[in-house]
Length: 412
Length: 141
Image (tube, rainbow over all chains, first blue to last red; front, side):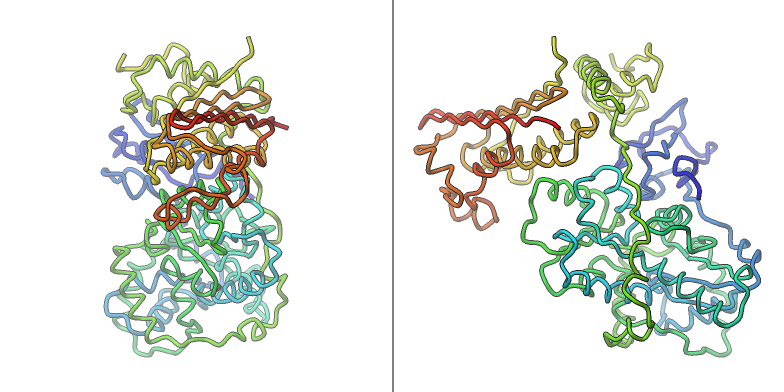
């Protein structure tokens, strides 16, 4: 498995980066600094939310994902399309067009992640009834949110829904199905078509799984460009979709909560709103809520930065499509014939300490006192000219020796 | 002299949307120090309840926070209407919050009892017409 710090969630195009402060100021974990006129990311702190990619006015921030050609490294190629993919197409009334299109552009098999999502919903219902997880139960389907909680909200660890992500379940089932058809394991390549950089890194690194279930992660944008020309020319559209309206609804914020829970739930989307809810949870607010769905992107997965379509348009299309989708009955779990364990985290994802200054509390205290002293000498206008997102961040960088001790505030 | 980080906050009266900002800032500092999450939770709850109290009852006030290696001292001082009967105010479920505040989900009468429950030192002084002072300490494990 790849170590977190070695994994590049977002890549900078230094030619295009003008060294402005846009991405740095809006990064929710303050992972970005502008050094020598270029933005640089501290990958230890990055949760892969994609805010910087979305906001960069110069298109200098690129999300990392695998090239489509990687599928050709495998003899038997399986595509895992997410529910949000269906919101990208104009005048799409039957998702089978997309699935047949995927077979046309080189895949041998498709397995819808929305199906995995429906299974997650069924499992979640059981877990909520069992009541073993601390309430309010927090969904873990958005990997950027999960990373954020693991990095910064350690108090909420016991509230996490310990169910695999829909894509992991889809990948697991799809691979088993291929093997049961007699295809040699080494020939099988499972590829997720991702709406966001967070799902790229979480699948590459594996969150809650012992080892990654997918072999590659493609972007919705790149696959879309290949799909559109073939979808228009399809001779025959085979009915292969096994998706129901519930699974499709997962593409949009609120879909997961609505599917799993009849009690009091809330669904928040957009990273700033997510931070608000997490802070409130730590302060014991939201006492009367039982289930919390959080999505880093505004609108839910349709808001991911690897999509091509405006999230609101995609959302409207998903709503229309849902009317034509079947409501699957609740026997999904018995249809698959797996026990509950199959769908649960195989291991607890690691807690990280992105805020902690030093292992030794005394040392951390000294640095913090030093930083406070520096902060009091600064204008505290958070202009970003120094290359740090705030005066506080600058003073801490200075106290922690991240930047040379003679670095001066350009405004003083 | 013992090392200490001092933080001060103005808590605005009748501004529910801003309540919790001081608590967030304190939490963020404690996380930098690597304080145990359970202690951070106690601080967050006590601090937030205190902030909300000043918002609801005292038209705002000030929070003075001193963070040491082994403990946090929180002083909440307001010039509000004061508390007539502190013993009664400390009774779980007792509340003088107006109906409009209760409609927002606040004022359940658990503020002061929770602040006492989650802290290691809790002192409250109040004078009717002058204001209230709450002193809290949480000792870190």
